Image (cartoon, rainbow, N blue to C red; front, side):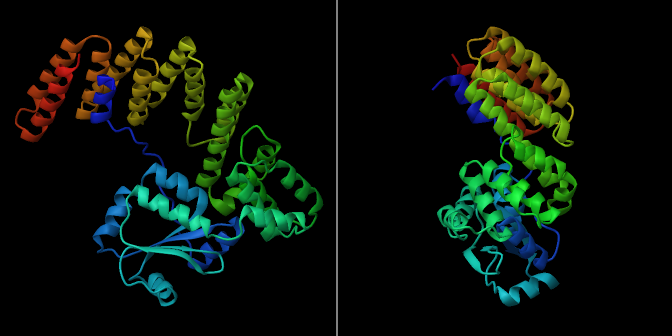
Length: 388
């Protein structure tokens, strides 16, 4: 293994700290209604305020972006304090004897899967995937009903959602349905489009945008923008797959038009595209803009960019030098251990091991009264020193 990559892997964890699982704030009846409208299962975290594993999951697992990405997409998420009023009412129908108890319940109110005990990320994701397998009719069953002529709204929302999750195109199915379903409510049309939207380069996406207000009223601004972001990312990936810069430009344009929260996405999409085709000049220009945009309010994203530069452009002295420059800016902004580690790694990558060792010694002299931190600095020092 490349020793530099070993050092990066040993010291720095750049897991995304984006949005974790979003839990509903309405009533249980609201959750059931939403599950029916969106064709989803309800994920229930049945907990108590004194339960240690419950608190650990709330702080360390539900907050992870990987958990949020999977659960926000596939489930209506609900937390139930089983010792509160609503929780006691819930418990009368769904008894719980140990905490946390994790349940997956369908829109009819039936438990599909149930598990007791705290879970780490891997376990939580595995539970969700198992629950989805038993969630209801398969795509094959839905296709059979659709082919047989069923065009009822409950069938269509489930069918479109299943098509999208399977990676199949929803465009023809949705457009045919909308053309013929003359008595469809605006809210129903909006949800069909919302669930059926895949990439940003589609007619479905454009139609969904027209009903933005209705969709936000039903699912929230955050979930609407999450859908837009996902669609833009998929189109940008298609741009890479087919080497079509026009698709990249379309994904960037749609992100700029329709996102109010994630303003860095435009540059993220460009960075992925230019990295894929090793367009170093444009990649560096975009990286400069990205760092300027994120350094003050989202240093973790800068850390991730620097690591990507170090590992994706190993033979480019210009990009490695720029990575060290960015790392220095980051460390000057926040003189913490993690940023020091990253700065020293980039210095080593640029053949400046002696400078890296001096930076560690300098930092260690500032915290000489903190024995624990001194040991951590010494560990970094020794690893950097051993690098050949």
